[in-house]
Length: 285
Image (cartoon, rainbow, N blue to C red; front, side):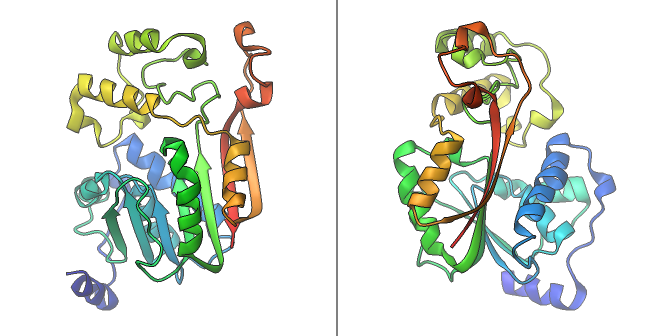
């Protein structure tokens, strides 16, 4: 089927789309902001129209779609342990009026830690958006070594993580808990009670397309279990693990928040660790 779509696009182009259809804030954030960030970091070192890209932890594929439609990418293979990307044709139809997604986008469901190297031709670039804080810690080194083997010599790997665990909302529970550093101040039981008792609406850009699959109570349990599985990765550890896998550090940017650290946490953790909420990392091979 994919070759038929490629042939269609060769003669008639990709399906028409119109950003004026966008009504969903989660979609808008990933279609606009996330794609622009990837373009800024990856588009500066690779020619997106000719590059073969791998998205590790592609999620629903919205950012991949934006890179194709807005930034000229032509070949992106997304992998994830969940199948959120299966919703993308419907999402693109609802939010952009597209009859079909571009043929240059392919997706694959993988098992956690399953090797990718050797299964497809080497890629020019790898990207990962807020994924590696969710990977089991003992799988990090093997996965980075495997991704190193997937990348051609001279290729680049872009990683973004936000929020980092020790930052004010590093629990990934801000949909329900607005108190900064609450996950470092109270017990898991207290966190769960706060989530369970939450009655108000969530911020529109925090409601992903998987919400409807779980329902209100099911989504609370899903998000809390995601919190409990976080690997507590820090920016320093990310740099150390990736460079130990063979990657060269090309550029990094760490963003911090300007907030007052609670007295209960002062001296318990370094201030820099508590305030650093995001890292952008560009690696080379």
